[in-house]
Amino acid sequence: MTPIERAWYRGARWLSLLGPLEALYRRMVTRRREAYRSGRREVWQPSVPVVVVGNLSVGGTGKSPLVAWLVRWLEADGWRPGIVSRGYGGRAGAYPLSVSSETPVVQSGDEPLMLAQQTGAPVAVDPDRPQAARWLLEHARCDILIADDGLQHYALGRALELVVIDGKRGFGNRHCLPRGPLREPLERLTEVDALIGNGGFQSLSAADAKGVPRFTMTISPKVWRHLSSGARYPVDSAPFALDTPVAAVAGIGHPQRFFTTLDALGIPHTEHAFGDHHSFSATDLPAAPTIVVMTAKDAVKCAGFADDRCWVLDVEASPEAAFVDWWRARVEQWRPRSQ
Image 1 (cartoon, rainbow, N blue to C red):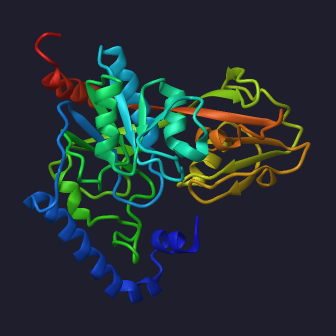
Image 2: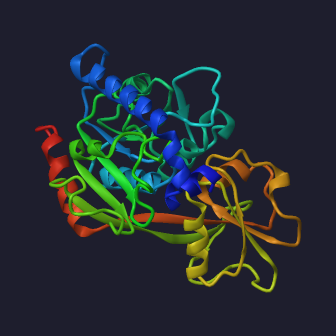
C-alpha cells in the first residue's frame, strides 16, 4: 500500500489540504457523467446485454474473480459470453486485441490474460471499450458481454451495473480523489443495480445506497498450481516443504488480502508487497532456496522467468445463493425467445 493509500484508509487529517483539488475533481466527474446522459457525448449501445463489473474506489476489490464466476455461469446456462477490458498495463501494436491464453502479457495486461486463461472465453482489449465490444460481436459471435472494471467508462452502454466493494476496507475516508480513494462520489451507488460485498458490508451503513440490492461473496483459495509445470494440488495442504523459507509476493490492489489468506492456510511466509499491476522481473523474486508463492494475476507476468520454486494460489469467487437467484432472474429477461 502506498503512503497516500494508507492515509486514505487511516483518515489522515492532512488530507483536508487537498479539499480544493477534490472539489475540482468532483466537478469534472459530474460534468463528464452529465455529458453522456444528455447525449453531448456518444454512448454506443450493443445489440446484446452488457454487464459492467466495476468499483467506486481505487485499488482491488475482487472484481476479476466475480467476472470469472459470471462467465462460467453464463456458459453453463447456454450463453456465449465475451469479456471486454481496458487492458491496463499492456501495450498492443494494434487494437482491438484478441487475448488468448498465449498472448504476451506485455500486450494484453495482466487481468485480461488471467481471465482468458481461467475461463477460456473470448477476451478483447481496447482503450476504446466500444471497439472491443464490436470485435467480440463480429468475430466471436458473443451474445452477452461482461465489461471488467468498466463502471466509469460510459461510452459503452450497459444493461446492468454490479459494483464490488471490499467489505472490510470499504471506501476509506469516503472522499474523492485526490483527498480519498473514490473515483466518483458515493451518491453514484444509488444508480447501480446491485452491490457485491467481498467479505460482507462491515464498512457500509444502512443509509449508503439505500434501496439498492446488496449481496455478499467470498473469495476462497481453490488450488495450488506449480507455475512451471502447471501441475495442480489440493489447497488443504501445501505441496512444498514448509521447512524452507516461503516468500509471498503480491502486486495486486490489496496485497494484504493475499497474505491473510496464506495465514489462514497455515503457510508461514515473509511479505513482499508491490504496487497494483507491478511489472515483475526475475530480480523481484527472492533468491533460492526460498519458495515463492504468488497470485494468479502476478503469475501471468512471472511465467516467462519462473523456476521450480514458484507456486500460484488460484482462488475463486462464491456469491451467496440470493445473488445467484437474483442474477438468474435478470439474465432470463435477456434470453432470446427462440432459446
